[in-house]
Image (cartoon, rainbow, N blue to C red):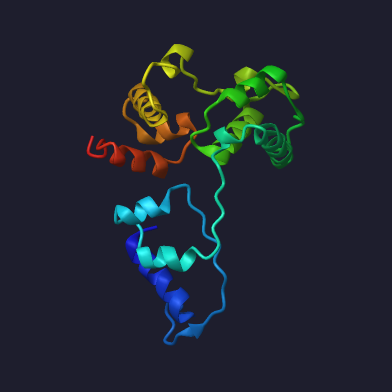
Length: 200
């Protein structure tokens, strides 16, 4: 959220008033705010990217949800939920994920968390030609095991290498890179800025 918008939200929370676009008077509001972020907001505050006063105003009750890769038991449940929902929405009669495909889902790192899983299942539902999702339908981008287990490579360094490798494969096209990785373009641009690659 841009800093200017953060200021406006803080004002709404403090004064409990809004002014609609084109209106001439303020209106009282009584709202409860549920805010979610995939970033460490305390770090964002330290880096000047999130207002400290808004952080403490929002942070009344905090719930921390571990990333999907740290709760792999949830992957089969979520995958089948998305499969059922998306099959109905796209009018496809697909109701099963093969054991090998599920094994691949369980091994994937899921840097894009639940949203990435949903995108992968949706793509598989669109591409699947039978009533069972197979490994080929997932089109997950994997690296060699020896690259992943390279000595001294942290998760952050692995993430950066994966992004930069995919960016090269996509000819520098950020939109295609984000799609290939199963993440949002905004997430990709933030990471590139963080790694001082934003100007490239």
